[in-house]
Amino acid sequence: MHIDAAALDAEAAYKLVSSLVVPRPIAWVTTLSPGGAVNLAPFSAFTFVSHDPPMVGINVGRKAGVLKDTGTNIHARDEFVVNIADESMIVAVHESAVEHAPEVSEAGLLGLATAPCLAIATPRLAGVPASLECRFHRAVRFGNSGSEFIVGEILHIHLRDGLAQDGRIDTRRLRPICRLAGPNYATLGEIVTLRDLPRTSKNDPGPVK
Image (cartoon, rainbow, N blue to C red; front, side, top):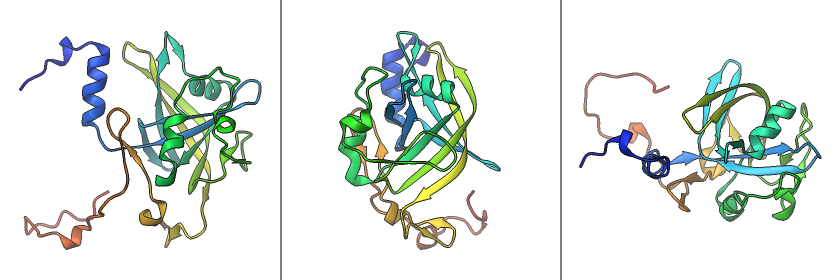
Protein backbone atom coordinates (compact mmCIF):
# COMPACT_ATOMS: atom_id res chain seq x y z
CA MET A 1 0.00 0.00 0.00
CA HIS A 2 1.18 3.50 -0.81
CA ILE A 3 -0.25 6.86 0.29
CA ASP A 4 0.67 10.12 -1.43
CA ALA A 5 0.97 12.56 1.48
CA ALA A 6 0.43 15.52 -0.83
CA ALA A 7 -3.03 14.18 -1.71
CA LEU A 8 -4.21 14.11 1.92
CA ASP A 9 -6.25 16.90 3.44
CA ALA A 10 -5.24 18.21 6.87
CA GLU A 11 -7.64 15.98 8.82
CA ALA A 12 -6.63 12.79 7.01
CA ALA A 13 -2.93 13.60 7.43
CA TYR A 14 -3.44 14.21 11.15
CA LYS A 15 -5.23 10.88 11.64
CA LEU A 16 -2.52 8.94 9.85
CA VAL A 17 0.54 10.63 11.31
CA SER A 18 -0.80 10.80 14.88
CA SER A 19 -1.51 7.07 14.77
CA LEU A 20 1.98 6.29 13.47
CA VAL A 21 4.00 8.53 15.80
CA VAL A 22 3.18 6.53 18.92
CA PRO A 23 3.45 6.33 21.84
CA ARG A 24 3.65 10.04 22.63
CA PRO A 25 4.37 11.40 26.12
CA ILE A 26 1.87 13.93 27.42
CA ALA A 27 2.64 17.41 28.70
CA TRP A 28 -0.22 18.46 30.98
CA VAL A 29 0.31 22.20 30.79
CA THR A 30 -0.85 24.85 33.24
CA THR A 31 -0.87 28.52 32.28
CA LEU A 32 -2.50 31.65 33.66
CA SER A 33 -5.15 33.52 31.70
CA PRO A 34 -5.11 37.34 31.60
CA GLY A 35 -7.62 37.32 34.46
CA GLY A 36 -5.69 34.78 36.54
CA ALA A 37 -7.64 31.59 35.77
CA VAL A 38 -5.56 28.40 35.79
CA ASN A 39 -5.82 27.02 32.28
CA LEU A 40 -5.03 23.31 31.94
CA ALA A 41 -4.62 21.33 28.71
CA PRO A 42 -2.81 18.18 27.51
CA PHE A 43 -0.34 18.19 24.62
CA SER A 44 0.99 14.94 23.18
CA ALA A 45 3.38 16.65 20.75
CA PHE A 46 5.87 17.06 23.60
CA THR A 47 9.58 16.41 23.77
CA PHE A 48 12.93 17.15 25.43
CA VAL A 49 14.98 19.53 23.25
CA SER A 50 18.08 20.57 25.25
CA HIS A 51 20.00 19.65 28.39
CA ASP A 52 22.25 22.74 28.69
CA PRO A 53 20.17 24.55 29.72
CA PRO A 54 17.38 21.98 30.11
CA MET A 55 14.50 22.74 27.75
CA VAL A 56 11.28 21.07 26.65
CA GLY A 57 8.93 21.84 23.80
CA ILE A 58 5.23 21.45 23.02
CA ASN A 59 3.30 21.93 19.80
CA VAL A 60 0.29 24.23 20.22
CA GLY A 61 -2.24 24.39 17.42
CA ARG A 62 -4.77 26.96 16.29
CA LYS A 63 -8.53 26.82 15.90
CA ALA A 64 -10.17 29.03 13.28
CA GLY A 65 -6.79 30.72 12.92
CA VAL A 66 -6.57 31.64 16.60
CA LEU A 67 -3.85 30.21 18.84
CA LYS A 68 -5.23 28.01 21.62
CA ASP A 69 -5.51 29.46 25.12
CA THR A 70 -2.31 27.76 26.25
CA GLY A 71 -0.26 29.41 23.53
CA THR A 72 -1.91 32.79 24.05
CA ASN A 73 -1.22 32.67 27.79
CA ILE A 74 2.41 31.62 27.28
CA HIS A 75 3.05 34.53 24.95
CA ALA A 76 1.36 36.95 27.36
CA ARG A 77 3.23 35.84 30.49
CA ASP A 78 6.40 34.16 29.14
CA GLU A 79 5.94 31.14 31.41
CA PHE A 80 4.18 27.80 31.79
CA VAL A 81 4.34 24.56 33.74
CA VAL A 82 4.62 21.08 32.25
CA ASN A 83 2.97 18.62 34.63
CA ILE A 84 3.54 14.88 34.20
CA ALA A 85 0.47 12.78 34.97
CA ASP A 86 0.46 9.17 36.13
CA GLU A 87 -1.86 6.34 35.11
CA SER A 88 -4.43 7.19 37.79
CA MET A 89 -5.10 10.50 36.00
CA ILE A 90 -5.97 9.36 32.46
CA VAL A 91 -9.63 10.43 32.64
CA ALA A 92 -8.78 13.86 34.03
CA VAL A 93 -6.09 14.36 31.37
CA HIS A 94 -8.58 13.53 28.61
CA GLU A 95 -11.35 15.68 30.07
CA SER A 96 -9.01 18.67 30.38
CA ALA A 97 -8.85 18.76 26.57
CA VAL A 98 -12.47 19.98 26.40
CA GLU A 99 -12.53 23.58 25.20
CA HIS A 100 -13.82 26.30 27.50
CA ALA A 101 -13.79 30.08 27.52
CA PRO A 102 -10.36 31.57 28.32
CA GLU A 103 -11.38 32.64 31.84
CA VAL A 104 -12.66 29.18 32.81
CA SER A 105 -10.25 27.17 34.96
CA GLU A 106 -10.09 23.55 33.81
CA ALA A 107 -8.15 22.70 36.97
CA GLY A 108 -11.03 24.05 39.06
CA LEU A 109 -13.69 22.28 36.99
CA LEU A 110 -11.90 18.96 37.44
CA GLY A 111 -11.27 19.50 41.14
CA LEU A 112 -7.49 19.39 40.75
CA ALA A 113 -5.54 21.13 43.49
CA THR A 114 -2.70 23.45 42.54
CA ALA A 115 0.46 24.51 44.34
CA PRO A 116 2.68 27.56 43.92
CA CYS A 117 5.83 27.49 41.83
CA LEU A 118 9.14 28.94 42.97
CA ALA A 119 10.15 31.21 40.08
CA ILE A 120 6.95 31.88 38.14
CA ALA A 121 3.41 33.00 38.96
CA THR A 122 1.74 30.11 37.14
CA PRO A 123 0.85 27.31 39.59
CA ARG A 124 1.63 23.63 39.14
CA LEU A 125 -0.69 20.70 39.79
CA ALA A 126 -0.25 19.49 43.35
CA GLY A 127 -1.10 15.80 42.84
CA VAL A 128 1.13 14.87 39.90
CA PRO A 129 4.43 13.00 40.29
CA ALA A 130 6.44 15.70 38.54
CA SER A 131 6.16 19.32 37.38
CA LEU A 132 8.56 21.46 35.35
CA GLU A 133 8.51 25.23 35.83
CA CYS A 134 9.33 26.74 32.44
CA ARG A 135 10.25 30.19 31.17
CA PHE A 136 9.34 30.87 27.54
CA HIS A 137 12.36 30.62 25.25
CA ARG A 138 11.08 30.78 21.69
CA ALA A 139 8.25 29.73 19.36
CA VAL A 140 8.53 28.53 15.77
CA ARG A 141 5.54 28.31 13.43
CA PHE A 142 5.18 25.34 11.10
CA GLY A 143 2.92 24.42 8.22
CA ASN A 144 -0.23 25.97 6.84
CA SER A 145 -2.14 25.59 10.10
CA GLY A 146 0.06 28.09 11.93
CA SER A 147 0.72 25.72 14.81
CA GLU A 148 3.64 26.72 17.01
CA PHE A 149 6.38 24.64 18.56
CA ILE A 150 6.88 26.43 21.87
CA VAL A 151 10.11 25.86 23.79
CA GLY A 152 10.58 26.63 27.45
CA GLU A 153 13.66 26.60 29.65
CA ILE A 154 13.17 24.52 32.80
CA LEU A 155 13.80 26.62 35.90
CA HIS A 156 12.73 24.24 38.67
CA ILE A 157 11.71 20.58 38.83
CA HIS A 158 9.22 19.40 41.44
CA LEU A 159 9.25 15.66 42.19
CA ARG A 160 7.17 13.37 44.33
CA ASP A 161 9.25 11.97 47.21
CA GLY A 162 11.05 8.75 46.28
CA LEU A 163 10.76 9.31 42.53
CA ALA A 164 14.44 10.11 41.91
CA GLN A 165 17.12 7.44 42.33
CA ASP A 166 20.82 8.23 41.77
CA GLY A 167 20.01 11.31 39.71
CA ARG A 168 17.50 9.52 37.49
CA ILE A 169 13.75 9.11 37.63
CA ASP A 170 12.47 5.68 38.60
CA THR A 171 10.14 5.13 35.64
CA ARG A 172 8.19 2.38 37.38
CA ARG A 173 7.33 4.79 40.19
CA LEU A 174 6.55 7.58 37.73
CA ARG A 175 3.87 5.37 36.11
CA PRO A 176 3.62 7.65 33.04
CA ILE A 177 0.88 7.58 30.45
CA CYS A 178 1.10 8.16 26.72
CA ARG A 179 -1.23 9.07 23.89
CA LEU A 180 -2.01 6.79 20.98
CA ALA A 181 -4.53 7.61 18.24
CA GLY A 182 -7.97 9.03 18.98
CA PRO A 183 -9.22 8.54 22.56
CA ASN A 184 -6.69 5.79 23.21
CA TYR A 185 -3.96 5.90 25.83
CA ALA A 186 -1.33 3.47 27.07
CA THR A 187 0.46 2.86 30.33
CA LEU A 188 4.07 1.86 30.86
CA GLY A 189 3.69 -1.87 30.33
CA GLU A 190 6.74 -4.13 30.21
CA ILE A 191 10.17 -2.51 30.45
CA VAL A 192 12.77 -4.17 28.23
CA THR A 193 16.37 -3.88 29.45
CA LEU A 194 18.97 -4.01 26.69
CA ARG A 195 21.39 -6.26 28.57
CA ASP A 196 18.68 -8.95 28.76
CA LEU A 197 18.25 -9.15 24.98
CA PRO A 198 20.28 -11.41 22.64
CA ARG A 199 23.00 -9.58 20.70
CA THR A 200 22.69 -9.42 16.90
CA SER A 201 26.22 -8.07 16.37
CA LYS A 202 29.62 -8.38 18.03
CA ASN A 203 30.10 -4.64 17.66
CA ASP A 204 29.22 -2.62 20.74
CA PRO A 205 27.59 0.70 19.74
CA GLY A 206 28.10 2.06 23.25
CA PRO A 207 25.42 3.70 25.36
CA VAL A 208 22.33 4.96 23.57
CA LYS A 209 21.86 8.73 24.04
